[in-house]
Image (cartoon, rainbow, N blue to C red; front, top):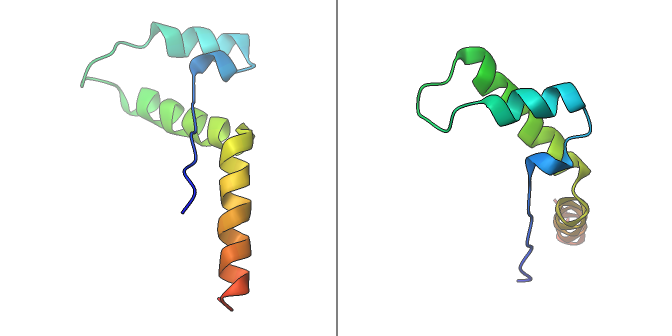
Length: 69
């Protein structure tokens, strides 16, 4: 099994307004529903844009295809 190192950072966010909102969020366990939704959506987008994550997903798909799944 090959390791994949996937690093996500807010600095990867292209939208300046979204980046500002993310940087202003507290680092606590008290986030609003909207803040949680924003963080989840941003994390998903950062993953989709991450070359290492895309490489991992392609490898997983190729492995599944080779096993007939």
